Length: 508
Image 1 (cartoon, rainbow, N blue to C red):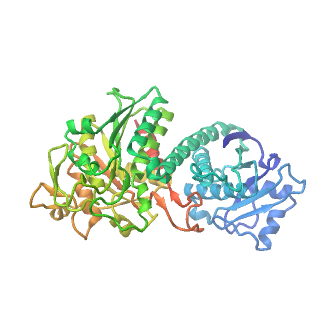
Image 2 (cartoon, rainbow, N blue to C red):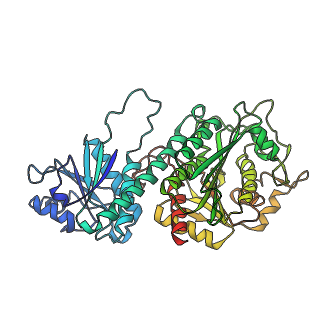
Image 3 (cartoon, rainbow, N blue to C red):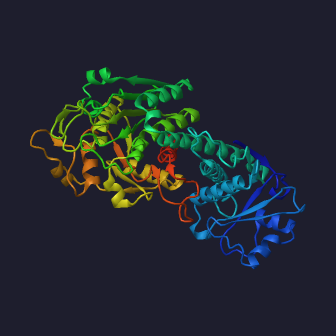
């Protein structure tokens, strides 16, 4: 879909559909919505007076101007109570409007910049949020379907800004929103793809393709022999049960620039997780193709980093493998040795994500980073603790890094919740035969998993995001849920990480 920006009045815009908005409880619309209402002889006020539109969050009504406006239709989207209005409200409203445009068969549609007027947001930030909500709201996974959808997506979307002096900022925000949203859609595609279409080798090929797009980026893919030479026994222990070769992906933006801050992103890349010898129940096992949600987020973020040419040294690490049972698979009771020399007793082969991350975190130290952030669909315990689709669990060794993540979460709308890293969790990881075991028992599973990872995140500031409840949406649509979500992969993490890195670059 082509994204455009133009200066002008929305009521003078000729299009299949124009979109305006209204806060809940407003009886006399003002601004752009008021201008459309006046041109249509009070049609919106009449709709409100009759109780047919209240401005509730996600509510939408369509009017037909019958020649009063150049546009064929007018949509009024509800923003909810003004006191609860956020940039996430902007994304939600934009997604509601975009879906309605598609349902109406509009080939093109235009919108005001929700939130930039009485909403009080910076016009650039508001424009970014509108474009993000529009693109994410229209997302559908169609790669492997022969039958096209009943309704085609609109071919173009235009943001209309009345104040000409702000058009440049709207253009910048729209461009940024398109870059970030398209990268999130890439991450969604990766999570939605069946495991036989998203193997470790497929992820490596994609990483090489992304890096080839930018002069500032390079990519190296380590094979199993390379990993063995580096002593990555923890990563290879998980990989040995699969016939699919494992890959360890290293992407670098601005390599060799020692004058720039280094930030390392690590994404868990289990492209299919059967649980290994500790086999999972068969119900919903197909969803385990999404156990590489962290890897998908890192790959998507690296695409954003390259396009924005951020003045940072950003490294993306993706240990990618399947976790399958076979005669070659690692077993409960086995002891494996990680890259940093620590030995690990395998209690449960379904606690494999922390094992591949262990070697990736150890490898990250060679870049002498200012910070390392890992994302992983790591534990069901985090989903139990925080709920599905509520927030990612955030563990962090540094208050400044935690603050960066929390600030980015507020802006991006991708929520995190600070979790504790108590030293006492280590008691549950004691082993009779090794330095530590890979599970800590039934209680405190999300904490013990993070404490396990901390043993390999040595020599640098580190944050761990357990995104197990966030990367795959299974809930039915509801007015309470963001309208830009659909069932399937969410692309969670791309918007969050992109915001962290943009803020970091801006601060420096």
